[in-house]
Every structure is written in C-alpha cells, then in structure tokens.
Image (cartoon, rainbow, N blue to C red):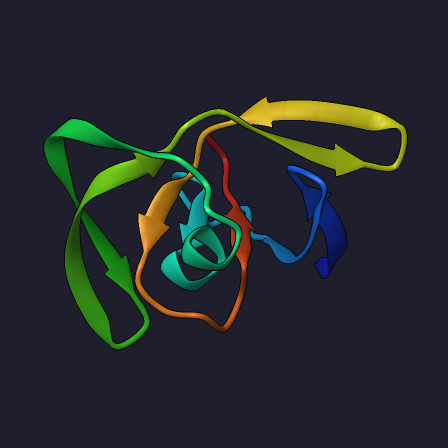
Length: 90
C-alpha cells in the first residue's frame, strides 16, 4: 500500500511494506528538504531488488502524519529518488 502523506510538513510518497525490516528514506528527499542526518555507529547490510548496500546514515527524528496521528520516526537513508519513504516493521 502506498500514498501521499506529510513528513516534517513536506508531502511525501510513502510505501507501507511489511517485508522491510526497517524504515527508509531516499537521499533525494533528504537533500531536497534539508532533513538532518546522523551517523550510525555500525553499517547495516541491506538487500534491495537488484542490489546489496551498506548503510551507515539515518535521519534525525522526523514527524510523519497519518490521518489524525503524528508519529516520531527515524529513517535509514537509501540512495535513490523513486519512493520518498518506506515504512517497515521496525
């Protein structure tokens, strides 16, 4: 399931994916909206369709609004610009 929601007051295309172990945000969305990043002390090896990558960066805490609820989340940052955010099962 996917749809348009707001992340830190910015419209974002968000995919809800129960198969994802973590939540992810695209580097394009991070750069476009100047979302602060933080280093992760260890790298995560992530498998995506067609590639494997190591990730060692996450966002600072951001607000995701779904209907009338606001959630405070941190996202791991992936290269790419197709989907703004992926909500996983973390």
